[in-house]
Length: 242
Image (cartoon, rainbow, N blue to C red; front, side, top):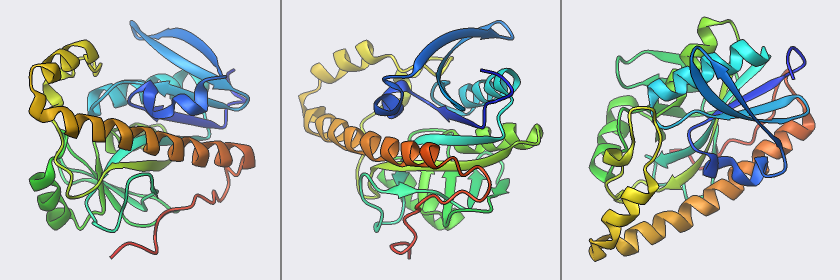
């Protein structure tokens, strides 16, 4: 796959997009001294670059350089800031804000505001982000993907599935993310086993994430099948936004 690629999707973790890519061709390729895993199917490609802005930036640069897509999508999970957004609902914003410097990218399609934060947002931080940016959802990667696409003149969109609602208190996750954006699952599991008060919260998050992943992949598969690169018709959850 090369210049025929129309859609490139940048996710943080494979588990976010696993139902979509399970039958796709897995390819490992190197770009600027780093190895990336790509999933290819027809005119679409997915790269799972890791958690956080730097990991997303590197993955975006790699997939654009190696596949020359017409459109780059930031896909994956987001936390709800608006109480109206429920687990498993799809959110496609018309604006993405980078909380690091307040810069933003406007998108022709979609509705609402997504803010990209430096860390996983707990309940209190969600409330602050909603107030500061008038945003409905939060993630960690979309702003970096948007900036990378914009720098290379490639159209950008974000498609997120809500994995945790505004009132949900996230378990401590950030300290289990390494410098390359990989989530150290074994270390996290060992930590949770030793802290039984976290078990119910972690189990709930796992159920929520599975629901969000299924919903996200249904939407992405529909979008790819329609191949509407010009004038995409994603289905943002707009009627429920305040």
